Image (cartoon, rainbow, N blue to C red; front, top):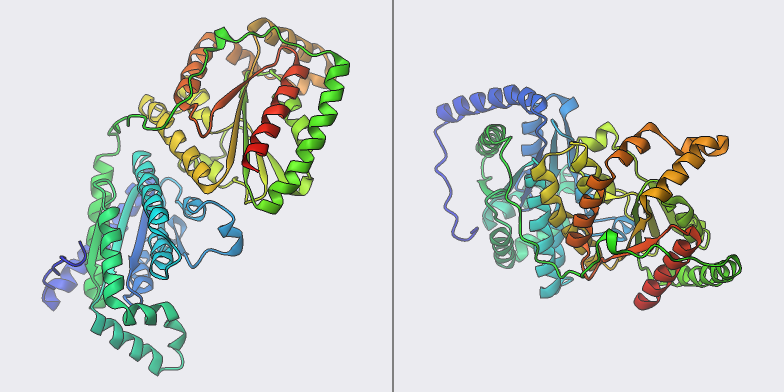
Length: 488
């Protein structure tokens, strides 16, 4: 792709200036339409060292209100970032709806540097490529405009710029060791870049190669590509996205109506098992930290099913410095304005730590589906997106444990009334709980579909029979201990 690229003929100065003026004005006009239509725009600027990535971003943002954009310079990941999934810091940087985000290098640069310096084998490279393609496709499927620019210069031009910058004390700092290494190994880098561009060139997020020899010509190409992309995105704003076929291995699961809820534990047995399992879990937590294994425990279930008490018994066995419980409520405005998985990506644990989610990303196919907070196309697409998300976490090395806490309708009513009539428990019951109860059958259908379509072999669902809360707590502890023992 890069090796076969033919540069576009640069226009004469008069035409260049005229088109540049028109493109700047067009972007200034479009920024308000982007805001009105709540279109999130992500511009990834990659390219050779000294090709002018920072300069072109600086020129582009001059045409946009500073309140509507952010610029990120993605250097090598920090030690903290290395303890999170590869895509974590990139997903965290995506813009809100109606705003722009400019990345001065990003996931391409991170992968290419590791690849070129011999720190990434073929299998890992192939896995990263698949992750990147899924990431970019998920963004565009969820309404993002992703514009990918690669600034291209020839070896001699790069060498000339390096020497020019090194000649002056005030600009030497702008030349990195990587820039010089690239120039010395230009052909090797060219082949690697070419391969990457081909591998990640997709219809919904194509690569645009820009002739970066002249500053004004570089700016014009970037502006015209960006403004045309915005124009097309605004015109296609309401288009439905194809639902992808599931390609992940699944575990067969029973329907909720088939779950036997007549299970219980005597108090003495409960106390004995609780003490033994919590002690064992505490020991395993220490080993998890030492071996840097991340753990994600996800809880979903009926209102009043006993999620809180269940979480409390697991958390009670853990070192408080090594876990965090995330109670997930309705998204805040800044969360709602981004991809629905953004608020979960940004809450992931680092290696050796445990994240416990009290409600999860599955809200997309339950509450958001049934309450009309997203379109039918959105929630139907989400099953595959969630499986991809969890596969990304599994491949990173995370242990994923998902619980559905199950009770029957009569038990829920009994617990609702108890909460309503007990002053110390009234904070636990809301009008929304009663409204959701009226839709029990609809929710049961949605939960059944969710469990059938997202119980993968790498992140299966575990049903906790919770009419007897003691039984459910012990079962959850046993599952967590068993899963951690497997990985350790």
